[in-house]
Image (cartoon, rainbow, N blue to C red; front, side, top):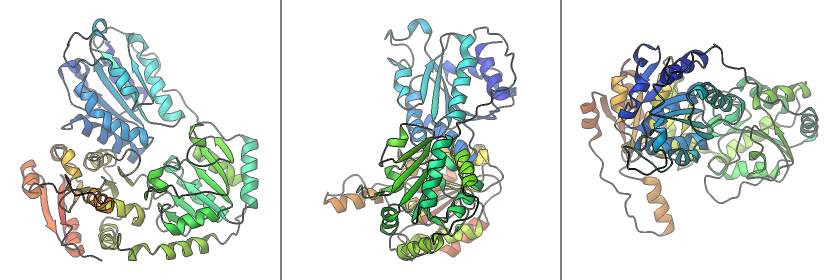
Amino acid sequence: MTCAELLITLLRDRYGVDTVFGIPGVHTVELYRGLDDSGLRHVTPRHEQGAGFMADGYARATGKPGVCFIITGPGMTNIATAMGQALADSVPMLTISSVNRRDTLGRGQGRLHELPSQQQLLSGVARFSHTLLDPTALPEVLARAFAVFEGMRPGPVHIEIPIDLFEAPVPAPTEGRAPLIHRPAPDPAGLATAAAWLHEATRPLVLLGGGCASAPEAARALVDRLDAPTVTTINAKGLLGRHHPLDLGANAALPAVRELARDADVILAIGTELGETDYDVVFDDDFLLTGRLIRVDLDPEQLVRNQSLSLGLIADAGATMEALLAHVPVALSRQGQQRTAATMDALALPQDPAFAPFVPLFETLAEVMPEAILVGDSCAPVYAANHLVAQPQPRRFFNASTGYGTLGYGLPAALGAQLARPDLPVVAMVGDGGVMFTLAEIATAVEERLPVVILLWHNGGYEEIRRFMDNAGVTRLGVDIQAPDFQTLASGFGCLATRVDDPASLAQALLQRPEQGPLLIEIDAHRWPAG
């Protein structure tokens, strides 16, 4: 078979890939030979950045890597932003690209789509970037990629194939199954020390991040045994279920939770970066941990970033939580539920003027679509949702307001999530500014007949940046932008669209959403009740 055929075969048969996102180009024509009857679903976005965001949403909704086929040069610079977002949030993504012929690489001859070094450019937004120079090495390079996804802190991997190798003859694969990769278990001595400290603690605190998403049962059991208030970050939302009595939510940047954190004598942080966009969204560097900090992470370098470490375990989050449960066979009592309730009462989130307008919005969503996956861009409803929304399971809430913080993420990532989980409803929460970055992906939603609800919060520009400019005493410039008629645009794509002004009309629109194809619901922020 050819190198291109081998790639398709390995992805499908060895690694269980079922969906590929990509836009064909002259350099990838041979990559597409036979793809139509391969059994893989090919989804064509309207921009390579959309392909990357769709793969990201697919991966977050399932835990499986999203896969992209991307053209040389501009296709790769287009997808680089999406890879940057996936890298920041440790999302598994495999980007397969073409590159110019081997004999022309690095020669600056002005070839079609030529970059001085495409591999070097992409290595900055990937766990690794590899140029395939020997077609028979393809199985080994793919195995490396999936070893990253399965065995270490995941993220994007880029493999580029010179266009003269797509048709190169290679042997058919001799092994049918992917290798089994087991992540490291916690060191027994370190685990015993961590357990001893947790037993001794009188004011413990647990911090759970997105690295725990695959082990919700262990997470719930552990925090119950420890009777410890628990911060679940944005990417860990739903890990403890909806309205767990020990769940502080993603509110680590708010004063009452910060006070609780400073007062904690032992802190157990599992699968979390302890990064700014989860713990310090007010950007004042005032989330302080003064107690003994125990961290569990697959990345040894991450253990010593952001906060002063007392004990580090390089290990899988789920395996560590299961092991800790064996060290805490009987539930401890440290007034955890009372401490959590007092902290949440002090926060008074529904009464906070910054959040109050969005309380009825999310109550309506929870009532009409309680199982929905909520996918967000960087926009006002998403900032509020980070604090207000509770989900029944992990992998049902994610957005681009964390980590890299790109605009344009919400719509295509929601399409990827819907393709990954056709059994669940999906809502894309977007703003009138950010959605313009990837608005063309409405065409993809229509073409694929995806029943995604696009909830568009229209406040006439870049509201968050307006606020930052006002607070800094900077004259507003470039933030009061002209918006299109979204109803007309949606109709032109073949997408149903409506406007709503209050929770009752929103509920009615959601109840009447189509079973096939998207629905755009536009909310005028200036007419929505202030709460």
